[in-house]
Length: 240
Image 1 (cartoon, rainbow, N blue to C red):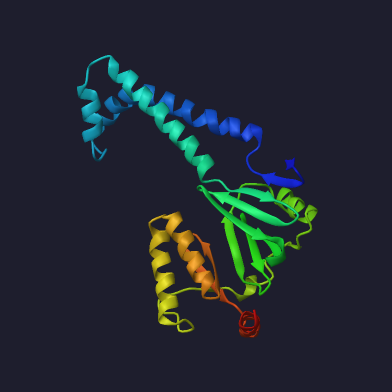
Image 2 (cartoon, one colour):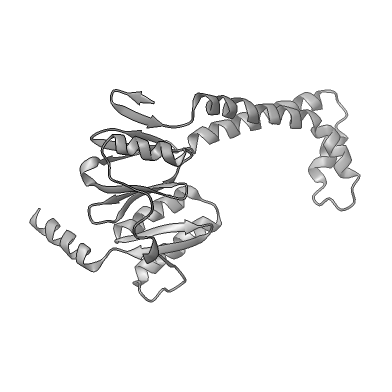
């Protein structure tokens, strides 16, 4: 939607309605039937960790159904809240771009952005030295994202022009210094734990040493900023 010459990309009204209603309704239904599910689970010899099910079955009070139903609704509401909290909102203007996810805002002036593209479902921004400044999963259709950026005058690429330069990271990659390998090792642990916040922070640390990183599942792929571009950037910094 457009607002004061800006384009905001986020869930549509229909999507928001579904996210608000579906998880709590599913939670209500599952919660209502949990006592019956518990009785069925206890009767199966191969079900592990029967303790929680046996506890529910042992409570013969009528309020147990209301309790499990209420818990189901609460769990559904929590899922709805997290869906909004963890989804990317893109606020695109003629002068800058603002991304918001998990309560964190990132703002990038247009003058610093050389190109924008989608890598699968991730929106990617490169700076004037072709280093990644931002990479995050988004839920919009590719055409919507492309149209929003091009309408505001950003250089849009249909594919990552540097995709052939990415290599898979392995422990103690010889092209890296010890500290760089340590950052990738720490990020690998974050990915294994599905700790998105830590993985996101470590990605920024890796960007700061001039390396772009992207993921394929739990695998990390990298490309280093070209030496001639890095040298040019250093010269500019020395004169600024």
